[in-house]
Amino acid sequence: MEGQVEKIKQSALAEIKDISDLQTLESIKVKYLGKKGELTAILKTMGTLPAEERPKVGNIVNSAKQEITEKLEELEEKLKKEELAKKLESEKIDVTLPSDKIKKGSKHPLTRIIEEIEDLFTSMGYDVVSGPELETDEFCYERLNLPKGHPARDMQDSFYITPEYVLRTQTSAVQARAMIANTEKTPIRIIVPGKTYRREDDATHSHQFNQVEGLVIDEKGKISFADLKGTLEIFMKHMLGDDTKLRFRPSYFPFTEPSYEVDVSCFKCKGSGCNLCKQTGWIELLGSGMVHPNVLEMNGYDPEKYSGFAFGTGLDRLAMFKYGITDIRLLYENDVRFLQQFDRMDK
Ligand code: DAH
Image 1 (spheres, rainbow, N blue to C red):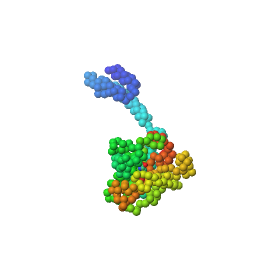
Image 2 (tube, helix red, strand yellow; image 1 turned 180 degrees about the vertical axis):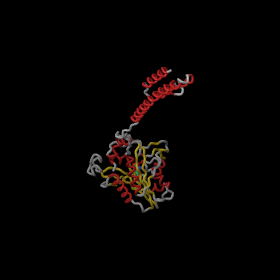
Image 3 (cartoon, rainbow, N blue to C red; image 1 turned 90 degrees about the vertical axis):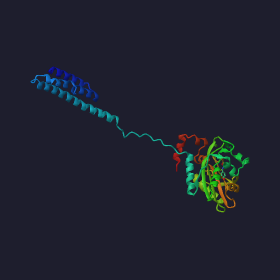
């Protein structure tokens, strides 16, 4: 019996030596010390032994059990420590490592320009309004004093979708919508920034571009050409610098009478002549005028009682001049390297 216990003990100790993980350790524990374990089996046979031998055999089995238990406990502690160390190592956070860069987008130069214009005009009491990009011939042309067959329609190469629907060629279309919507005939002070479309495509023209339209209407006598002039002066000086000068040249637009094209002094050479202004010292930037009586009448305003002014400008051109962009197509490619440059230009 003694020899048998010793053999079990030796084989247990030998197996313990090879244990390298807690799972194996648990199965060895069960194998030797568990309820159905080998040593327990011997204790169970004690009843068959003569009474005087029982204490001796009991002692031998218990001391073998104890030795195995101690070895297992020792090893268990060691393995647990190792496991913890491994876990700590793998979950370690190095707070000195540089963090992941958070990529942030850049505002498009046109968005910047539009926001700047909106801030300026709302500070002067204007509303910002919008209209459909797919517009009817009626609003894009007819209600602006441009009946079908009018020669001035040739000034703009339109994208017609059907004979009645056109991609709006000018934000002026929203003038008529705003007048008709204002059934109370209260004063109108609006700007309309938005996308416009024409059949053009080269370094200075894109088939899609942006304009901002302005319209002010009030009772006759309240709005004069001086108001238009003052407004455009504030507008251009705000966008291009305080030393900007304006020049009003008589022109023709079907929806205004009188009409003016407005040039600004070249902000690169300050008027002395350079390649940007083609040596003239001036850059043509806006169309404007006093709202034509026909336009007032067609859109529900009695020209005897109301008058107003309107203006319109291309935002792409304004952005190109302001930021020194030479090809309009760059504005529509959305190359982040291009867009990022304007982050540094913010005032
Ligand atoms: N709609 C004109 C264009 O696209 C610009 C324009 C000229 C707008 C005169 C106006 C204006 O409001 O009064 O060329």
